[in-house]
Image (cartoon, rainbow, N blue to C red):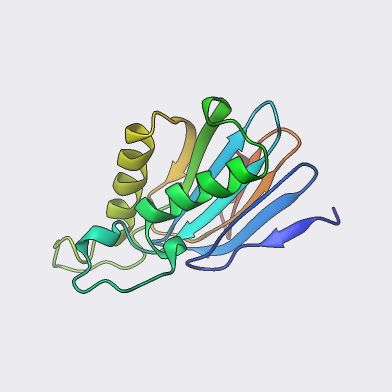
Length: 163
């Protein structure tokens, strides 16, 4: 497809149909895919950290870096493209625990915290999560299609699936 946009780490993007949003290297990061089922507007964020509120002296203007700010910015972009908030659903991927440590502190569990933060923000905004492929200890590449909202999850050594 000609209209394929790569979404890098700590970035987000939205587009109108037809198009595909792709992000690679989702490890502990969480991929947040939003889809307007009627207008076929899609949005994808590759969030690295759970919450912008947990950062001291946060002067970061990169809203794609945090799950909480990425979701809000993604919604704004989609609405600018004609999406209707009441038609938007969500899918999540990533949030892996890439390394094993004896320490089980919150700092180490970043993948799990990213997924929890994304779910909390989506629940706060009344956006239904219809599917997810999260957790584990492996990386993912995801492709998000505007024609039907299909999220293709590719995992090295574990194959490909659609959610």
